[in-house]
Image 1: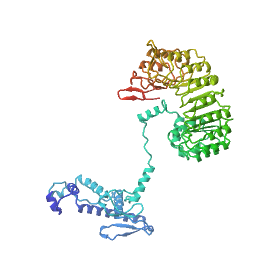
Image 2: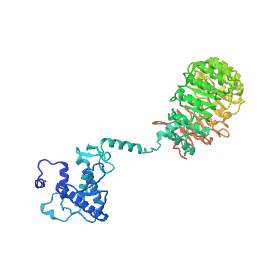
Image 3: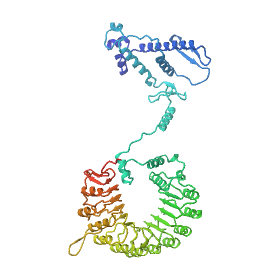
Image 4: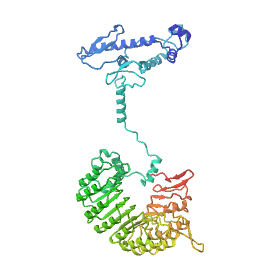
Length: 620
């Protein structure tokens, strides 16, 4: 190494680049001669092309200042961006590679590192081509031009080259501004890579009750594609109500409903408008809806924060024949606005749903509603703090009701519920009583005596029912089989005992479960008996062995029924051909080894790591 450095006149310490060049027997003079030969070859090729094509007026070839090198440049009569020396060198190198195959430039022979001076005249080896490739690669690197002035390949402005300078479309480099624009354009134009659905995404859909068994239907795929590209849609006016309702639910789930997307659903010929998430809408948006939808019959607004008195007044003035009205979270409406609405639209109103409103919706408003809305058939009043037992006494006059849903925050005595059911129970098809913490078996007697057309029954959070009374209720009840039964958390925290020490099984026990299955198994589609921990294994086995099984059952929730086993679940699946989903949180006797068919989801199985949301992989 010392002898070679001395021969080349290199003194002092050597860098990594110097060692690399020396290892490949590359010298500065060799690089210069190679470049000169390449430029000379390009010039000769251009002269031959010009001689063949003849003179041209568009471009005049003139010799450059350095005539000894044979370097030629093109002088154009049209003004344009300056060509940098580096860009000219790159273009010359590119054309030389493509056209210079007929005449090869002479190359200096060299030897490997560590050979003697006498070996310089040896024959050319394969290392020569490798060295030439390395020279070309080194020449293409912008490292040699760092801190030098260059012209931008796009805007032709002069800038200082840095290690972060990016290449341009024409072989040059880009300035900082053009690099930023190029990056933004690339980011905008590049489509994001579609990430496949993960196990966590599937679990999230399961917990959100988005049940997709097998391949998604074509209509569902179209709906999801429309929601993803909602900004490109023009109108959904001609779609059926069920499809528009599904679209609106997905739009609300993704929080896409705002002032710009609202116009897709508020059309002049729309008879229904379901706004499941109106939190981002303003008063002007609601007013625009009512001005556009002149024949609106069904209106549902959830999270109607900005639904205030001026909006209600405008709804009254439009004259829309509203038959069904649902408002969730309309806390800024006054009692006077409610009364004006019932007075103006009460004759057409057939259904009213008021949830989670403030004290403005009180007993006086309910009395006003009953007086001015004689055709009401559906009433749902939930989580309204100003509603008391006086409202139940007012609703007693609506004997034509077919659906009633009540959930109050005030304590109401069981006698008030008994009086209500005794008055309107004969025509009821749907009865929903939530959070019944103050009632007992007397309520079951009232339903048993007055309700004979029920198809949907919900009584939740009632700790005072007894197993024997509920079994008697279902066995002798002169009513059609129920298709929806919800007895969620009808259990006591502790077991009640009689004086002789015998344990009374509260709420849903083995007798009650077998009785309700015998009564409604032929029509049941939905069954919820959460926390019925007193149902024994023998009762489950007897219920799941009923004649005919559960031909229509699609959903059953058995969470915290602690005596369930794998064999019982498999037996339930065998007698339920349409079953799709089973919820079994807190059933510790079940194991994750439970085998179920592909069309059934078992959610809530426990293992040593926690909860398993799905017992199997969904497949078609």
